[in-house]
Length: 199
Image (cartoon, rainbow, N blue to C red; front, side, top):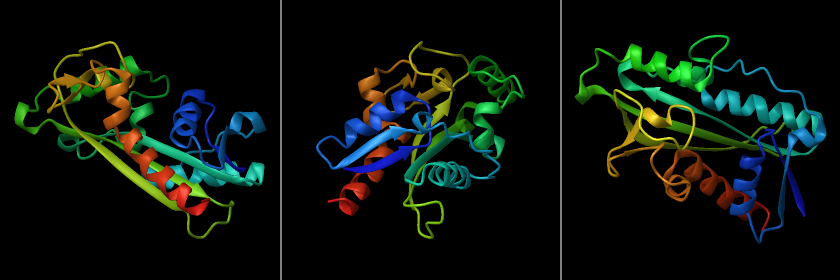
């Protein structure tokens, strides 16, 4: 078996990626099993932050590592919140405060200019000094609506409308989300690459 340590303590992410690698010779384990300290996410892009997290994980475990970084960018706000998506409303940020701030900042933006997208970047590093990490990135296009709808999902999902479905990311089922989201697409791309490497 090829062991890959995922730079997260989130067991849902571990399960999601493990499910997509079912039947392969790859075993995914969370970095929390190895007491890896969280990395300082000092990057200015999703790619930089994902590399920082993967490198930190590989350095502490001595194993191949994988990390993801994701967030939302809004065109009318010049790409914000971007890498600050999780901390958009400040030091004590949470989903509620972040979404409220986004809606306030978008108050005067007309309906035709409210386009946005979720991004997910996944990085795989064979070691902490891997000079050619595998980088997969995927997006999910949408529109920021004016008030929250739906109770599924997290983050900005209740205000992120998927135009072709006429529903927010918080109104669709988990099955639908896992078939079309930014993370689902990035995981699919990465698992295909990993299957090639570890065939």
